[in-house]
Image (cartoon, rainbow, N blue to C red; front, side, top):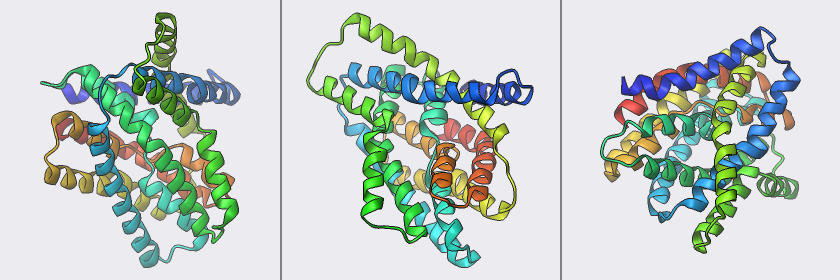
Length: 311
């Protein structure tokens, strides 16, 4: 029941979003507006509130980040080998690599961790949620930098413009800005006014269900066509190979229960929906990107259940 209670709400809300979009309860423009609200307001408030309120050091988050980082680079290497073996063209290479490592941590992983935290024995709920948020703050710049790099390298367009683009991606990323703001408040020992604390907490609470509804609506809108072998291969690396690599690393490091749980759940997340947007903007293989998102999200019902159970 513990696993069901942690994972089922996430996929039930995703299914609700898909049903609402399928039956035109809300228009595509309305869902787009909700996604913007979640990305630019809801999740930044959640991150800022949680990080600014924490008194924990970042040592545990750095340990979890190191595990995920190792698994990310291993997944990239495996995807490069598959590109060579499958003779995937340069036009599709960037989308394939990105889909194999970029997880949907904020929109899927964080909700699962929050639901799972209440049933984890011997670890405080606040402790594990704070650890998850701090780890997410470290992962945001990494995913943005690596995603742009693999897309541009695949198209042989790496140069000054590429670095300018990465800088713009980072500077304008609301999750990163909120994380930095929260870290500054926490590091300086500043005390948030109760009104600010309650406001950001209330807005942050709305972000998780809205994010999941938005994912469901997005999956209905995404057109999966062609490139199913590539998409399936990338999805399997993301939700099967990457979690197993991370689990092996975790066992070697013998981390605590909270650190292991956060790392396992984040590693088991499906390919991030935002990866499709980047592929589209950089004229990559959108069919591979879209297919990997849909297939990995379906497979993540299994991978996340295993992560919650054994992490």
